Image 1 (tube, rainbow, N blue to C red):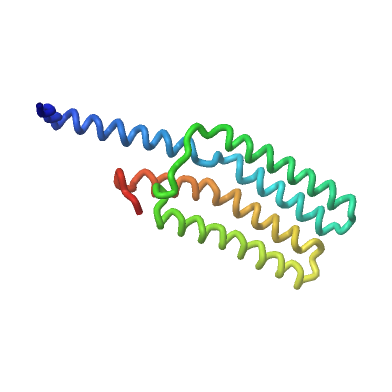
Image 2: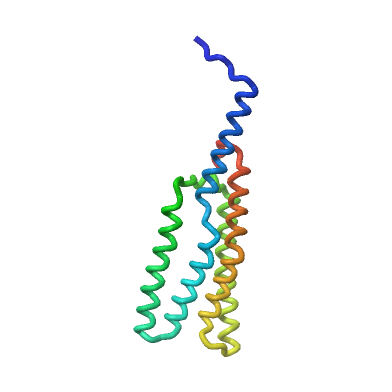
Length: 159
C-alpha cells in the first residue's frame, strides 16, 4: 500500500510551519537586551572591588558579583523553554561569537593599559567599564546577527 503523494500546497504549508517554529525556537533562546548592561555593571563593580585592594571590599564585591551573576544568568536560563543545537549556529555563528568576545577583551585591555599609562586611577576598572559599554552597545547587535545566521541556515543543515 503506497502513501498518497502530498500536494504541492500541503508541502509548502508544512515548510512554512517548520520555518515559523524554528523562528519561535530561535527567538526563545536569544539573550534579552537587559542582560548585557547587567553583566557589564556587575563586572565593573567586581573589578573596582578587587582593584580597591581592601580585603573586605574584595569579599563584598566578590559575593555581590557571584550573587548578581547567578540571578542574571538564572533569569535568562529559566526564561528559555528550548535549547538550540550548536549546529544551528554553524561555523559562521561560532566565528562571530569568537571575534566578538576577542574584541571585548581587546577593548578592555587597550583602554585599561591606556588608563594606566596616563596615570589614571583604577585603570582595570576603567578598562572593565569600556568593555561593559561595548558589551551593552553591541550585545543586541550580536543577538540580531545570530538570529539571522540561524534563521537563514538551510533546514536540516549539519554545518
